[in-house]
Image (cartoon, rainbow, N blue to C red; front, side):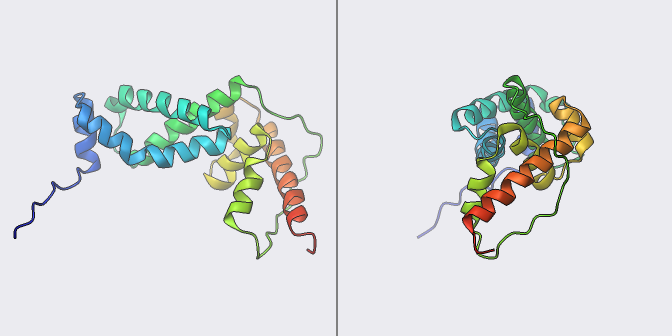
Length: 181
C-alpha cells in the first residue's frame, strides 16, 4: 500500500512571498502558524480574551498590509510579535490604565519553590493593567525601560515605577499564597 505524502510545510520565506502577492491560502497558513502564540502575548498584556482577539485581528491586518516592509532582519515571528505587542499597548493606552505611585524602590523577588506556573500566571493576570503591561514587557519580553516608555507613551520614570509596583503586588500575592515563607 502506498502512502500519499502531504506537501512539505512552506518555509517562512515562501509564506512571506506568497502573502505579498495576496495569496489567501498563504495568508491563512501564516495566521494559523502564529495565532496561538500571538493571542497569548495580547492576552497577557490585556487580560481580556475579547480585547486580545480584537488585537490579534487588527495586528494581522497590519501584518498583511506591511509585509512588503519585512526585510528578514529578524524572524517573521519576532516581527509579528512586535506588531501584536504594539497593537495591545495601543489598546491599553486608550484605556489609560496606569496607576500613579509614590514608592519607587525596586527590590529583588524571591519565588517559592512550590509555586506553580498556573499560580504565577494568575498572580500576573491579577495585576492592574498598566503594571502588568510594563512587567510583561520588561521581565518577560526583555524590553528596556526606554523602549517601554516609547511604546506606551509614558516617561521612563513611570515605566520604572510601574515595574516596581507590579513586583510589590506580586510579592504580596505570592506571600499570601505561601504564608509560611
